[in-house]
Length: 444
Image (cartoon, rainbow, N blue to C red; front, side, top):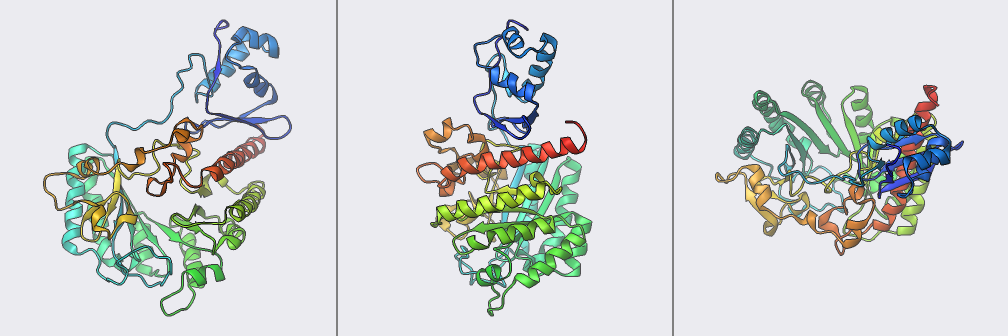
């Protein structure tokens, strides 16, 4: 091996930590982040695509055996290679799972001013015949395609207004898929103003999770997400969140960051850290946002997260920013157009849930006897494949995947410049967390 020439991956992020330690991550290989000791960092710095292993050993003072062991370790996640055949996430030929956003109802008990649902005043939900057809269509597709997983995200409107109608399908579908070795996961995307003992008990028995929309603490939530009668919703959501956490029900918070709640983002961050709950911040799509203030507030939030890491809080498990995939990586932003889409109350399938209610955007119907669900997806639109030349050449292309294709501008995410600042910060915090763990276990 001493005559071989090692190469660093072209999508390498190599940054300092503290006390001479560094971290390295291949931004095109999942879970590749590694903490490097000072001598290991010196080795990686010495790799220039020209110097042989023997030359690097001489330069760093390491024995050939020790150097070869280190290079072998780094090659496991393709931080280095000796043949330049670096890999990155690619689109599989066929999906192994399905992931659907189900629009269960237009009915909602809140009066959010920014609600995108065009049929909000139509109270109809998905009827029994459509739910039954959905169940049969899923079973048909799983059986034919030998799928390993199906996931439903039950949304609306407010899906918990339809809980009694859907709980039977959840039980039946899981039972129908079990003989085929297919796992069924389901979550309610809810405002969490409706929470009963029945919902709690069912969720615990049937492994149901919840994604909760929260715009901010107290006034920020109350102004943007009031009840239709005008009262604020924060106190009730706060009470219900704490109850779910006490019952150990999987729950996470989703916040759309916009000009109206930007100032409250640091306070919300501390609130969510104190709850020790998973949360995701997404920058609003389809409308302008104060870019300078957004960066200022995010920096403040990530400083708070860094401090909390030092106190044992798990950044990697608890926080996500937009659709960025810094650990798993991806070949596209979401399941739409490959292994999923959105199914409306009438059974029509759409590329994305933002198209629900727009007849011109519907693809097929689950009542179509000629196509299974995968065939419907394959025959539909594939907007996710339209990416700019800049995106295709970017080292973060597997992390941000050019963002949501529905809202791209000139085939790239409008927050591209922000991502170039945030992505390294996220990796910095992941590395800080790993570094602390290694020190706590006395491995450094």
